[in-house]
Length: 239
Image (cartoon, one colour):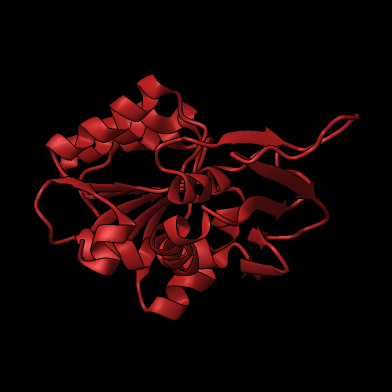
């Protein structure tokens, strides 16, 4: 499969080794410096994989709609208006957006959806995330995915870290704690604390390359699909 890869950050560093492993080909790399090239390009690839920044969105939307090229997007920190613009491409091409393309994280979310209602009546829930030191915001979008999986109706109060006194834990709350250090790719743990027992699920990423590999995997899934919005969950679990 021929791919256009957009982005030069952490994901861009792993794009070459990822396609070497999957047997695909990157025919064009678009960065902040040459984003204007999209306006002059025709359809040269089977799919576009975007790990860039929200500022590149208008050019990407124009390109994929004009050339009818499927879009896989892993860019985060979009505003609501930007998300609406991103999803508008589904009127022209198949597209998939996710904050995390790890297959393990998709299974993590699916597992939480399956077990949460059984544990919530008697177990208390805490989430910890550990990410590289240059991460500019907290909690991460992946943590928000996990929180939504365990509490889809937002019935629990989210408590982001704890400091001070009189902090006894209330029944219907979920603690969320963010760790940052060195070049950690990502570690996510959902803790369930019961009386005299603890159950937890942890996902560890060795390098960010797994996210590029996951995006390529999803590109293979949707490249022949009709136009519309797709999710990792429905493609993996046939929902």
